[in-house]
Length: 402
Image (tube, rainbow, N blue to C red; front, side, top):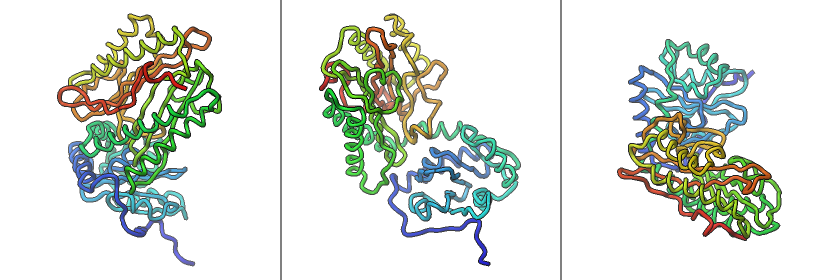
């Protein structure tokens, strides 16, 4: 009987162009290795989509299977399932090992072939499950475990010039989707019809700007009426009616990088109560943008916007924090939790960080002005302030449509 391998290298075809130059990935790994050395970490086992993507360029699709990136002082190796064949190698910076499913835990045997046993092993406490942590300890027999969650998050929060260029492109694509949605809004249209117009426009624009990329995950949340009450409510087949509040949300995904555009809109007309909330939210949005600069503390920015709403007796309608970081993230993976505009985050803004300003008020159904109001711009923190890279206009002057 032919012996079946536990893992092997299937370097099929030629390496594909990655979203960044090899020097970008090498710089990220050099920074990571310096952080590992400072923590006494001899090998890092990354299991999250965001860190695997950030350090290797390969954004995996788990579909019930585990993936990893193993980084040592000498090498970086992605670990992928056999179902993906040679694509992970073609789309990663560095080496790749494919593990087989002929027997359980070949994934860990493949990882161990790179790390060896008895090492000080780094892991991500915010991603590694209890089950996988037990497997790591059993197969790698580490002399110690080193949590790399926070240090890698801090590294990702500071964007390189190449990342900033990618994020600017993403914001421009989000604007394209926004304009397509605006053109599609009319009485009687379904939410799903409007959402598809925005998504299709963005995917075409991404393909034009990045002809060598892989395309997946770009999406739109377009809500109307009561469906606007939550920021992440899914699209439905509800038909738009005159006077409806609308929430435009476009989310292009480019090689693992997320950007967004979010706007309040109305169909045809806006009533007085709704206009009051909308204008107040726009005021908070503009105040927040003015506060985003080097040296500002996230919690202090939050407190100033809270005070703005409290003066207008609207703070009780706020539903979440006022902004978050951008980079390698998505609605189902990644998040630099240390860079959010909330009361419990004391991170100080620095040049090269990227953060949104996105205040939202939700008024309950049956009340005057009912619905969810949200504006969202993306800001790059500069040496003396910020650069707003969102171009689609906000406010009543442009967004009463249909």
